[in-house]
Length: 67
Image (cartoon, rainbow, N blue to C red; front, top):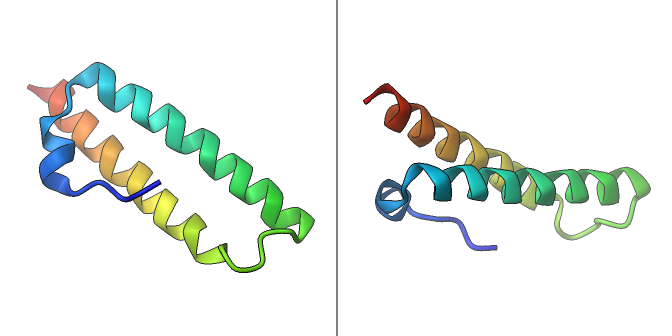
């Protein structure tokens, strides 16, 4: 998955944001499982990127809910 730019995140509606967060959380858990098994050798930096992406999506989701 590619990281979304903040401009494209702002264009998503609330339902799309929730769906994207769920999708990213699923990917994160998969990556963490692979890392625990030791099969995630070259992609360990991807975990950090996914966490940041989730945080950015949740931040935008909270902004939308406050309005």
